[in-house]
Structures are given as C-alpha cells and as structure tokens.
Image 1 (cartoon, protein in one colour):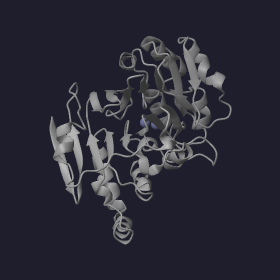
Image 2 (image 1 turned 120 degrees about the horizontal axis):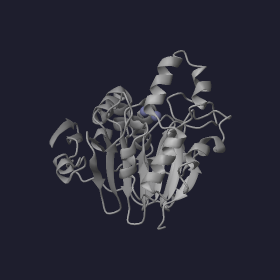
Image 3 (image 1 turned 90 degrees about the vertical axis):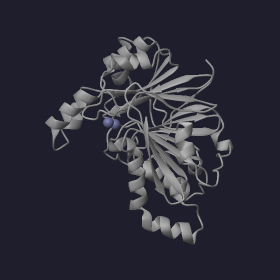
Image 4 (image 1 turned 135 degrees about the vertical axis):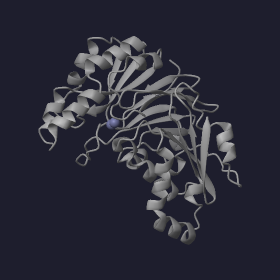
Amino acid sequence: MSKHAWLLGAGFLVACRGGPGSAVGAPSASAVASAAPSAPLAAPSASPHLAGNRLVLLGTKGGPRVGAPGSPRNPSTLLVINDVPYLVDCGYGTSSALVGAGVPLNKVRHVFVTHHHSDHDLELGPVVYNGWVTGLKSRVDVYGPPGTAQMFTDFLAYMRLDLRVRTEDEERPELRGLVFAHDFDGPGQVMQNDDVKVTATRVVHPPISEAYAYRFETKDVSVVISGDTAYAPALADFAKGADILVHEIMSPTGIETLLRRVPNPEALRKHLLASHTQPEEVGKIAASAGVKTLVLTHFVPGDDPALTSETWTEGVRKYFAGRVVVGKDALELPLSKP
Ligand SMILES: [Zn+2]
Ligand SMILES: [Zn+2]
C-alpha cells in the first residue's frame, strides 16, 4: 500500500490507498504516526450528551434537493459508541441534525463518507468547521473513497480567509492540524479502536465506482450501513448476521411523481433505476443476510407524502420476515446487546 501525506502547516492530511482486496488500513498506525503533529491531540472527553450507545438517523431523504423547512433532511447517519460519535455521510443539514440529536459539534471525532455524491458529502467540511468554531480542540479522522482528503484540503482553501482571521483573532488551534483525512480505494478494514472495528465493501452505484457500505462491529452489536447502492447480492454477504442493516430504498412508482417536476426526467430515471434498490430487492438482501432488524433510509423520493410506511414496506415484506423500521429523521435505536 502506498501512502501520500501532505504537510499542511501545523498538521497533516493523510491519504492511504489500498488495492481491491487489500486491507485498507486507512488509519493504520504507521499512517497516523507518520503524520503525528508535534503536540499530541487529546482524545475527546465523554459528555453526558453522548451517553447511551445508539443509532440515530440524522437525515433520511435521498438526493441533493433541499427540502422545505420541517421536511426530511439530506442523508446522514450517526452511531454513538461509548460516548464517541461516528458519523456516516454528511448531507446538507448534518450539523443542525447533530445539534438536534444532542451531540455537541465540538465532539465530532470520526466521519465516514460512503461516496462522493453531494447528498453524502456536501457538509463534510462544514460539519468539522462548525465543531471548530464551537471549541473543537481534539483530532478528527475522516475516512472515504479517493478524493476525500483533497476535498478537505480544498475546503480549507475555500475558507482560508475566515480560518486565518479566527485562528489569530480568537486564538483557536489551526483547523488543518486537527483533521486527519484517510482515503481508501478498496474493500477491507477502515479503522479499529478498542470500541469498534469498521470495514467497508464496494457497492453498486453507477456511474460512481468508488461507492462503499460500512460495517461497524462493537463487542455487543454489528451495524451495516449500505450507502447508496443498486441491488447488490454481495452486500448480503457483507451484512451476514448483522444485528441492524440500514439500507437505502427507492420507490419505482414514487419516482414517477418526482420525475414530473425535474427538467431532465429521462436521464434521471435512467440513473435512479440503475443505481438504487427497490423495496423487493431490499427485502431480498435483508433476508439473505439474515439480519435481525432492517432500517430503511435514504428514501427516493424522500418527501412525498403520498408514500406511506406501507408503501415502503409492502415489497420488503414479500421477502423479509424480520423487524422492519421505516426510518425518519431523528429516529433513534439503542445499540445494546441483543
Ligand atoms: Zn444519495
Ligand atoms: Zn449516490
């Protein structure tokens, strides 16, 4: 595995690349050690607001369109494990949703990007920045497909005027010194600490080839988050035996309503059908994987009131007899020993 590190003032961004099938030890000890800043960064301290291991759906509306106030937010999912937040994807509205979930933004610690569609990464830089302006002093690790580290570098450039002013005028630590971004380009282990092991597998989301699902394994539970994917039987192997599978879903009838209000309906229909999973297919994946609980999220379309819980689960139920949770923003599920 080759590694690339960019010196950025007081700190570094690190990009690690592993070929398919290799262990993508993005945050491998060597990678982080090679980029360790001169002063050690303190681990975030536990907070009462972070007590309770849980899964939180911060945003459940698939796609980049910003909804009306009060309607579902763009995608983001949070795991809180032993007082530490693990954020998967950062659609628009993620910072606000974290505040709503009781997670102090300055406690942001690990951020995972599934793929580079804007409904999954638009707020990547801002969510860390918003932590920084509210007192973030500890390190943040960001993981994702190729381009993730560069995206953060570019964000720092985009915000350089404000960053310079606030760093000097408000005596804040350099943001670039706090963020460690890790790129990976193949399935395998992404990170591991005493509380959790995180692995990734490639999913099917054309035209984006670098699209991933994540699996989180704690000593008590396993949670798989599909990211965006078309029907991918291999995902069932990756999710085998998981306690919770958080899977995206698209309504083939619902998208016809959506397509009537866009300027490019044919192109969008083609993209949606090729790159997302229909209810029956979600049921097949959950059944094949043998998961205990299936949580539906990233609804396409995500804010059509005509689509009810029954609409979403009818097809799923044809194949999956386990527990199905129709996700909505701010929904929380405890992560405890079954
Ligand atoms: Zn999406
Ligand atoms: Zn996508």
